[in-house]
Image (cartoon, rainbow, N blue to C red; front, side):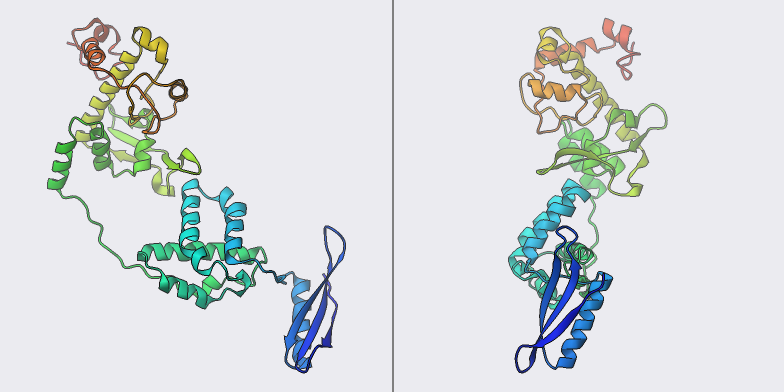
Length: 359
């Protein structure tokens, strides 16, 4: 694109630089811009040459009054919403809303300086790692601002990233682990905590674990294939593990295998109770817990129609979804039917009850 322009005196030491950006690709109208230069005529002519060169190469950035706050909202809407996970989006939005916009949001983004960012970081009363996360979000946002020709360059690249002091991760001792397990025995959290201690899996990976990913009979291993996250923006969503090495196979210790066997047996007992008499016709919950080992039964009473559809669709029942709380009479009945002396154990142990020992 070729440009034309001229220099006209405005005052004793000021000059008006007029130049042409060519035709608007949408309307076809000529795009003319004006810039005021203070100094000599030679300086004004040099500025005109620079502007025409940047217009010809596509590097020209049209001046506008968009503030940091306004661009942050546009960046979240136009780029972040469709390119990052819901959890990351929520974190970016929180950091910009709480820490960035209240301090530098009113500054026009084209006038934002590296010194403004340095002052922002110095004035934050947050943890070192949070300060580093804020810098990374700003750097990413301004990188896109430069790519979109909103600013000439990314000023965050001129600022050193805030340093983070390395800290030693505190882990539980053997005695502390024993006390935790002893306190949780008999509770619904016990198999989850045992699996977490035996595998080192993340919380989201535990919640997304499926029985088909667990091998308790052969090599005693489990496969991490997915993770579950919950955000206000996206609700419950399955996603791939956090890193490329997140998909992994973990060898299970014998103590974890024993606990998962008991958990599997208890899950089958609950499924059996849900299929008895009127309860099956009322709830119609099938395959409850068959897919996901750590689906959580929270509320008392028969499951709602919506939660039944979720169970039938193999959606993991978390604490936010109602489920069936078994009363003691039905649970004792399930234990009796699953015992080695029952006809059910003799007829179906090999098909439905893989961990029932027939005697």
